Length: 210
Length: 262
Image 1 (spheres, one colour):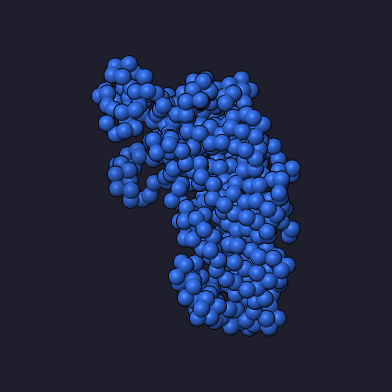
Image 2 (cartoon, chains in turn orange, green):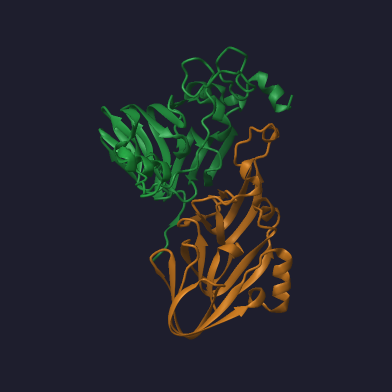
């Protein structure tokens, strides 16, 4: 059971089950816990090779035991997401912990990732259970519906879930090359039905200065 | 804890979504914003650099800070747009036929009904007129009435023009021991010997932390006698036609040379 203690610490109560969490993110625990490092994201050899190749590496650990375990990472804000059979796309660096019942994988996202400087791939989480996401500042959750498509700055994107189509939208014009662009040269456009998590801060991206 | 899911209907209009995110509603209107502070938007919104020809009229009336024009864009269209800045607190303020001077790095966005000008105080910008603007601060903003002295790092800005001046606490450095202290730092200095002093009518805005926002260049001032910070004059490139004393706006025809690196 995932529970937030304040907004920056995640408390997980365990009764013999296990969770996966970012390596080294445990700050305290009581009860009996065992920590096991999962090489290459815990998806076996194939997953490990995929992650190595795609740059979506995660160092995960599996925590198993009875009691309460607290997780935190660099005082980042933590957001809880409950998945009921749907798929969550998230940058590997923004994923703090997932229920053992959730599967993680890697998918190709196309050009969008390239503009973001995080590579062409993103991590997916699917199944039934809870996941904890990290963000710089509390994330804003925005609903996308067919009549309301959403554009997001790649630097502020954290994750999305649901049935969304994602395209890279470019505002690059000849003016960009004259050094007078609009400052928002690339945007990720989401269409369809689902939720997008956006953080109130921008990572440095390749397109950040354009 | 349930997470609030927002869509265009539930997003506030020209108000805070949370302490770190501000939502602007555009209805065919325009806003000036600092480059790269938009994090997401619904609807049809276009972002154009200040130098964009079609914006000439708007820029002429509302933008008078020519040399840092490269850092500003104009958003226009209709829809709702979210603004944020490195997870700092953001707040909106209303000016009614007023004036407010703010540290350049703190200003995020403003309505074109306000005019933005460089302040005579280096590193600060002044907004004049009626309208709304959005500013970021490290920690919530506190409003104070002069007379008071403030720590330089906590100062965000001031409204209605109280007079800002430096204040030095020389008391600590008196006598031989005091002199030694000041010279060597041995015996400790409190770190609070230098303050900004405000007197006169008005309001002073402070942030509740001494973490400075990264400085944003306001651009050089024309090198003229009597202009503070202008320095001993040598007119260099980028300062417009020689001797005119007017900095040059981007998008001016003369700028073609600069653009092509000539």
